[in-house]
Image (cartoon, rainbow, N blue to C red; front, top):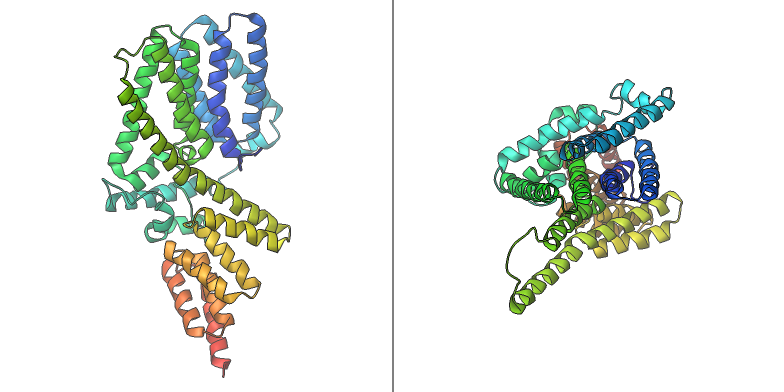
Length: 406
């Protein structure tokens, strides 16, 4: 189940944050009819979560619900929890001969788990080089070929991951141990604050849901990258903000009211923050959507429309490596070799280890009869990944054509 979020894991991340909040609202309702309606809603959302087949999300939600019970150890809550577990087991039984149990019984045929372990091992090597401040935001993808362990190419040949599939390791890679510690400090402070509201019995059910929704995402982030996806990441910060607002509204946070001058300064800071978020988060996200539309148009054979989407993508985010690389390849297919070289060189400048862009660039040089440049690009690719048979085959072809050339 993908709905509108791109893939099943993204859907699951969204759902596991919503379910604890819905449970909190249901248990906080004093009207029986409202509780029944919310129970039906939770059942529907839970069924959607099961159909995502995201095992990490199931684990995250299970941990969050256990924490919910620990925070509110009452008979009513325990009964609802056990009923929910029974319902999940019943639905699981319906799939006994289908997809649900099959994914647990089969071996790791797609190398999903072993591939992630290899990514984590490669990431540890990056952390060892830049332990405190990290390698820089979004640099994992750029640096991975340089640090990848040999096991990764064995289980996932000719692949290059965009994320570590563990948000905590990726934070350590890109912003260092200090950045990871800062994030964990925020989480711990928030959890303490949320539990103080729950203990004071002020909005305890809603707060329990918000806290446990974040816990579900944090657990899932051990095997995925929910904190880097716009929807769950924004929901997490929104949940934190709602919790703090609820505490302040009930007098949980003591303190003097800010002066008008201080409030004005804070609004300026908020405005700057929003502008930065739009520039560094929303624009790349819009560029990614345009890039995905271009890919869909390519598949349907609408080449001209696809080019427009790719051009839009690189305008919105000039650092989109895949956008420049794919656009260059499409230009080459259209015979626009100058444009193709320009875009492919931009991709290589952004990401020196972009194998796909370098192979495409080698192909353009080959078509233009520039065999020396083609050989240089292919040799560089082989240095990056000696096991890439495609590059070796192309290099042999270039050598043969160069010998026959006048």
